[in-house]
Length: 106
Image 1: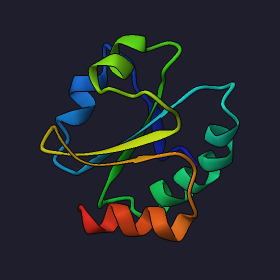
Image 2 (image 1 turned 135 degrees about the vertical axis):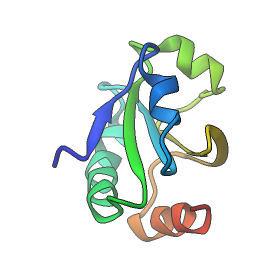
Image 3 (image 1 turned 180 degrees about the vertical axis):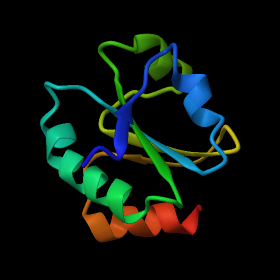
C-alpha cells in the first residue's frame, strides 16, 4: 500500500515532528504476532491517511529506539501526538479494537 514507511534511529525524531499524530509499529521479522498484525496496520494506514502517519520500526535493527521507548514485547504500537506518547498497545488485537484505541486518542 505504501502508506507505511520504515523508520530508524536516524529518521525517528523527524517522523515524530509531523503535524499529524504518528503511529509507530515496533516489530521484528521473526515475530509471528507482528506478521499477523501487519495487514491490519496496513489497512489502518490507508483508511486513516490524512489523519495519521504510520511508521514501522524493526526492533532488531533499532534496539536503541526500542530501549528509549521501553518496548519490552512486540508487536507494540505507540501513538504520538506532538512528539509525546499518548497511547500504547501491546500484542496482536482485532482491527476494531485497535481502530477504537487509535481513534480515542487522535
